[in-house]
Image 1: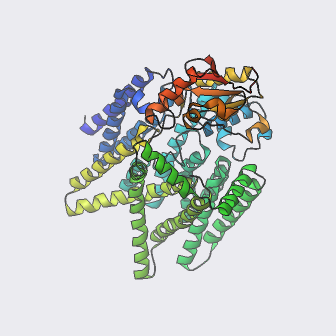
Image 2 (image 1 turned 135 degrees about the horizontal axis):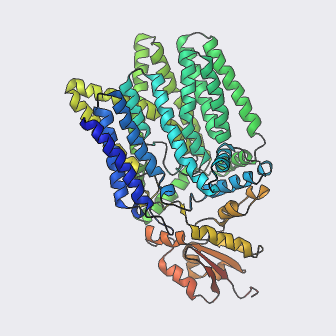
Image 3 (image 1 turned 90 degrees about the vertical axis):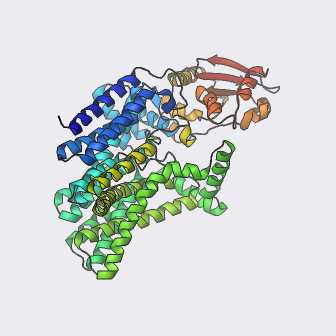
Amino acid sequence: MPWKKLLLITGNLSIALAVLSSHSTPATNYEISIYQSTPVSFWILVFASAIFGTVVAIFSTDWRVRWGGVLTTSISLISAVSLPIIRSYYFYGQGDPLTHLGYVRTILDGEMAELGILYPGTHLLAATLHLITGLEVRRVVVTIVPIFVVVFILGGILCARQLTFRRDEVLTVGLSMSLLLPINWLGSNLVFHPATEAIFFFPFVFYAGLGYVTTNRRSYLVMLLVGLMTTLLIHPQQFFNVVVYFGTVSLVLAGLSGRVGRQTIVPYATLIASGLVFWLWTKQSATLIAFLQRIVFNISVGTNASSQISNQSSSLSQIGGSFEVLFLKLFFVLCVFLLLSTAVGLFRLYELTDNQTLSRPKDLQLALLLAVIPILGIMIIYYAVSGRTIFLRNLGFIAVIATVFGGITLSRTKDLIGSFTTKKFGHVSLLVVFILFLSLSGMLIHPGPYIYQGNQQVSEQQFTGYEEFYSHREESIRVYNVRAPEYRYYHAIAANGSEFESGKAFPLPDHFNNKSLPAYTQNKSYLVVLSTDRAYTRLYGGFRYSKSDYRYLEQDSQINRIHSNGGFELYIIKNSTSRT
């Protein structure tokens, strides 16, 4: 048996053993790091299988075996993404995903009309999968993420096939898609997050658009329309990006060709109609109106994202981190792909100014890269006026295009190196690059101490603790929380209809108001402390809350713990003005 096939078999067996080893050690409570809590054998085996797959994909001469290598690398990545499922996490995704879980639950209860949700696509998909499979809703919601990862990888490969006829370049794009470059855990996250799912769906819309532009076939136009409407249902922000992007592509192609024909008019008519649908769909949305109001407010008071980033940079330094180092951890690999894609665009512009005209494939490449500029402009506007990291969602959108073009350019760079040295040296160079990229990107699949973030896990104790709390609480008493907003759990467990429209968190001043909590709360109040909150004292070394702060809760006579299940602690805070 050829050694490459043997390596491929070994890689797939490694994945199976890795999954078995991690499944045999399910999580029993909250884990601050999924990387540290998962058996080391899992990471060794998965990383080994990814390398084996990459070696086979680059060095084999049999194309079926080479694609087997890409498949092995992709499955390695998907198994790492699926760790919350494999290790039996009760739920995965704090914050937004809990609210989305509540949306799915409400849809299944037949109350979708009362939600008035602007982007029900992924929620309807989760509800449908629940009805088909019978799996618990919370497990189906977590399963949506690896499904869209598969869509992302397949879509990227199809895009590459539209852009190049060289199978070697398509294969390199397949390996590049496994790096999941859109993920940065600031604006796009590997949890149930519709904006991220829309980014992961974009490669299929990209493929349909490329297919229509290059072949003028009606089937691709139908696929483009279906893709656009699906994206609108998944998340309107990315739908808007897609319309702007392809509108710009059509405009640039018309300018380069110097004529307007059916191939230009039809896309314009499609995009104008899509823009009208977007307006009709979103104009009455409370979410959109609130976002626009926030932009107007931020402009009027001079608030912008730079002040938030400055504050976050200061917090990073207090826990021993560095903004510059964090930036490199999050964006180094993406920056390489962005530079490679930019180089292609600049080279095509140089050819255009030198020859005045370009061949059709080069015209298309230039148009696809120049169309990124408006998306970048929208991103800058978000950065300047939104006061949030929402602008990084646009960076995730751009990352899809950069991954495709960057992958093609990497393959051509390998051939260029091989022409100056030896073919084998070119292949080895590409392998070394991918091993480095896989190592760096692998650390971003889940949040962890590497990027100064805690695990997104929600333990069974936390969830069931809130369930019991909502069954017995006095609704007139305010609920304070340490880090995780209480209203997110309310959305997931008990909210319905209009109750989703508002949610207000009541965090506390650091160190529990310098260990003087009753003076801050004034009235009788609840305080929820999760195992997540206590775990963060280890992650941040006592920044904001230390172990002594939690000991204080047991020592203050006006603070009484009334319930605890090992992951959820409920305290009642009284003071001299409170009624007992």
